[in-house]
Image (cartoon, rainbow, N blue to C red; front, side):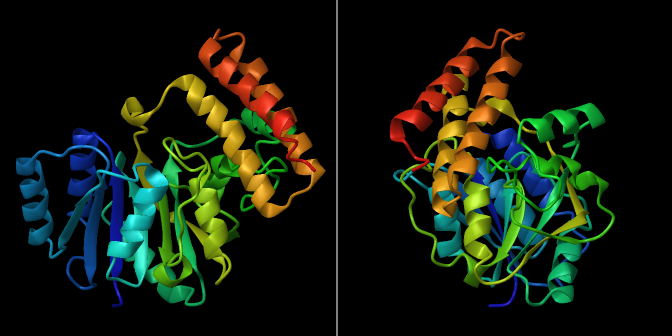
Length: 302
């Protein structure tokens, strides 16, 4: 069916989710275009809260589909379930801690009309930006590419920190997970991935890569939202740092990047370790060092 599924994957962040739902109900597009809201829950939402969501969304003409996962936990598996449950031909993934402005869904719909052959459209998170010196550091540490729509040599998505400077729609290799949409046919065949569990670093890069097989991806800088980046869902700092390295190893391997990509990732990881030293962030340092050892022990650059 032609329309839009707004999919929110959540875990025990009711306050954030409520704020997100309220922003969805204030859209200028109204009931002129079929829209459904899908909540994939890895935690627990009280029944009375779900009833409130259903009533709020129904008043805007948006049906609610709620699915509580008791197995196959993790963000990637929630994405897969959202695609399975969607009845529309386009899916917008929003983090549960974002707020979208009133024009957001109307602008997204128009972008798909303007680019009928695209596989997906993404947007920009307000406040996600680098200073001039920050950009230089990210470039030198291979966390960022010179091109806004390109991943870095080590497979990092730091280029998105300059997306706020864009004045027109541009092609991209990847989208930001808090704010990404795809045609359902482009991601219909998502499968479980062993290394994408818990804090799923890089899952947006992988999903974008899969979608690009069917058409180009675009970033529309008019699709700006507030991303509050609530810390409530963050895992142990050591685990997050380790996963940040290891998952990019898998992404490089998936892309068959060759030795240059792995050498760049080693350089990026060394920089991240040095960056945390003055802060005495020892859990993150341990995680990065563990990830660094994993690169060598797995000999993935072969």
